[in-house]
Length: 184
Image (cartoon, rainbow, N blue to C red; front, side):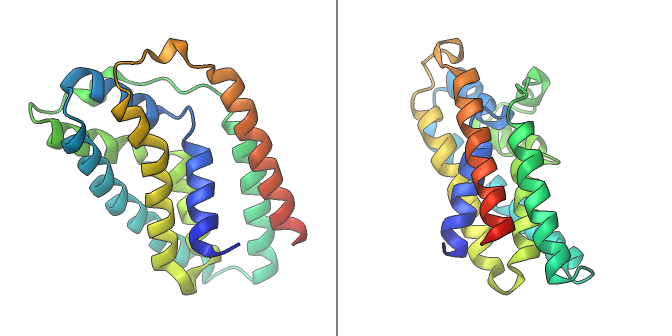
């Protein structure tokens, strides 16, 4: 699998049912301006994931390829468990200004700090330091694939989605990624 495809897939899976996906729903419902919200998600993700991928490269300089492979494997296993835990959205994250773009950018950037997708981006950056741009593009596209439909369907209620089932499927997908990282 290419670095771009792996990065996109990893983040898209990690984002399912995540607090930033819930944030996308809240922002879309509140502002009803999908284009500024989508652009804010794009720019906030690019900034956040570029920083995360770069930090991953810095860390990778201190790890051997075998250790890095097991760090990736264990990280995917931990993420398989983590996606089973429902996220809660802090409503204060959406109250940072009046502009849909500025509010969405700030809220998204802050919500991504220490999030599953940011950690996944750091791990991918560490593993694929020679293809860092592809990691950043892939993880950003993964965020867009997961969040743009939510923004566009902002009127749909989050309680109508089968989030428990979605989390279980995501966990199984991460388990598959962990097995692939360990043995392939």
